[in-house]
Length: 327
Ligand code: MEV
Image (tube, rainbow, N blue to C red):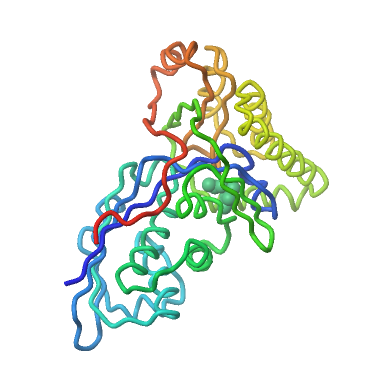
C-alpha cells in the first residue's frame, strides 16, 4: 500500500492584499504552522473510491467514487479543494487506485492563515509523489491555480505561491506571473487573531463592487498599494523596519478605505501602535482573521500586554514551502 506524508505552510500577507487581485503585486510570507496530509493508494478493481478524513473541516470519514470527484459541475463544501486537485491532476496524470487522504492542520481553518492554499499545495504535491509524476514547483503552481479557480472562480494565487515555494515572496499577478523569493532571514512580527472568521471570496467581491461604483477612486487606491509593495520590498531587503512599519500602517488605512477593516482588527492595530509597535495592519482579505504587528524587541512585551484580551498566534514567518515528510 504506497503511502506518502507531505506538509505545506500557511501564509500571511505583508503588503498588497486586494491590490494583487487587480493584476498587481504583493509581499507574502509562508508561516511555520503547517497542514499535514497523508495520501494512501490501494489497488482497485473497478470504480476506485476516495476517502477523506479531515476532522479540522468536519470530515470524519467522507467517501465517494473517485470518478464523481473528477467530473463535478461545481466544487463546494469542505472536500472541494481536495476534489478539485484530484480532477486537475487526474486529467494530466491518470491513475487507477482507491485513495485515502487524511489531513491535520497545526492552525485550523479558522485563523485565515491559508488552509485552502496549503491544502491545494499538499494535495498536488502528495499526488505527484505518490504516482511519481515528479512535478516541479512551477507545474504544481499552474495546476494549483486551476484547482483554486474551479472552486472559487477568483483569487490572485499569491497564497498558493507561498504554500508551494515557501519563504517570503514578491508576487506579480500579471501574465506571465512572477514569483521572486526575497532574501529575508527574520521578520519581527506578532500575529494576532481578531476572533472573527472572514470569507475571502465575499470580501474580494465587496471590493470589486466598490470599484464598479467608484472606478477612478478605487483604481487610485489600488495603484498606491502597488507603490507601497515596491517600497516595502526595498525596506524588507534593507531591514528598514521603521520604513516597513510606516508602509504597513498606510496599507491598513487603504484597506480600511476599501471597506474590509473591522472594529476588532482596528482595535488590535491601534492598541499595538499605542504600545510602541512600528506598524500594524490587517493581513489578507479582511473582515476578520489575523492582524500582523511589526515590533522591535524593546517594545515586544509592552505590545503583548496591550493585546492581553486577544489571541496571539504563535507563528514564525519565512517558513519552508511544501515538502515530503515521509515516503
Ligand atoms: C486573501 O488572502 C488575499 C486577497 O488579496 C485575495 C487574493 O489575493 O486572492 C484579498
